[in-house]
Amino acid sequence: MTKRLTVVLILLTGLVLGQAAHAEEPDHLVSIVTSGSNETQAMAMILTTHYLREGGSAQVLLCDEAAELALQESDMGSEVVQPADASPRQMLGGLMEAGVEVQVCAIFLPNRAETEDDLREGITVARPDAIAQTMARPDSKLFNN
Image (cartoon, one colour):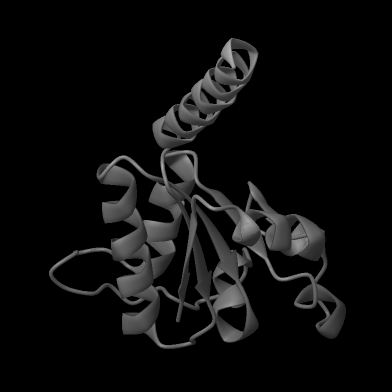
């Protein structure tokens, strides 16, 4: 009986410690932005910024029209919005400066004339398997617009 009790206590201790270790990790937000709308892009950047301020971690995945925010030679997202007094393009730069990983969908560049060299510095092409793994993590939240 004592041996069983010891085994149960060891297993319970491991379970509790494992949950405590997971609880210390900040929740992770995956912001998937697809809209070409300046205001929608701005709101996605604002919410992601606020999520970081609340102690979470984040990454941004730009797809479809919104992926043009990643191009050096694009005017996408350049219009300043209020009350932020910044454009989505500027806010995206601020997120990158804060350490947020920004990527374009894997299918964005192959369907356009642009190449990886045309992306803004620090923006890379996402690997679908890596994004799927991140999305499947229990600490990940998905925000899509």
